[in-house]
Length: 374
Picture (tube, rainbow, N blue to C red):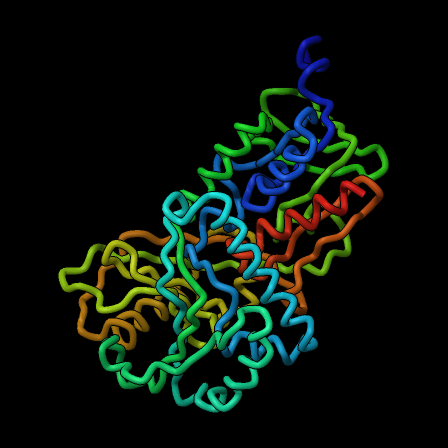
């Protein structure tokens, strides 16, 4: 049962954002910036964001060579170009807004390990550069000549560098979004499990164990920013969850001889150096159907694969012991274009970020706010 004060003050808003991750926070901030007097509420079911916003690898990237070539199999050239540009603009936006130091951002570049299986893609590097040069003003991809200094096993035949990619601290990024939301007086309620969004009544229905009855929040406008979980609220969305495993080793005795954002196996595996620890993640292509889930559990097959890859290919001379392991839930579809659309005149959705939430989250939110403001 609600009190008089709760009913009067806490249930009606100008904008309600469902989901308190990168896209949800970015949406609330950008909406509030244009309307400083608006009442804005974010509803998040977890203590921390429940998807992948704080459970990713911290890659400030927009696609390796083989990933982009794979995208060209399912998307038109102009669509791929626009998607890469959107990711790049998103990264530049958050760097310009918050600053590299605050984000823990490092411009160490991106690298892709090429084995015999991917060797054929090197012949198309010049073609991909020709597509992307209008965006970046120069070639994006180049081949690294001396790969022996990286210390990889001889299974790695070539190394391709992307000079524009970087890496950041995902925890610092979310803290900056939280702090900015607070400066704009955005209300954030955690532990708020949204059970339904009524498109006709413009209500967000929340279940909470403290109250016997369901809580019905209403707003002039609603933004659904739950990425892979959007299908639980809205029917007929072409969104599949994709679970990603990330592991971080204990600090190594020997200095890791490289820095940067590294990609392997068509981008399904990724790794980086954090404080002389190996962070490695991905591998969901080994058991793709099992990983189409929203359960935060570790797949032992994928864990064993990443551990073996770490010791046999990436750091073959190290005896690795992993200290952290976690999973995050991403959203995917038949291609990597995000879903940004209005469901009604005043209710919009931004989801299916294809594992690129760090890069594309801010820009995706900007497009959703533009739709809601019309």
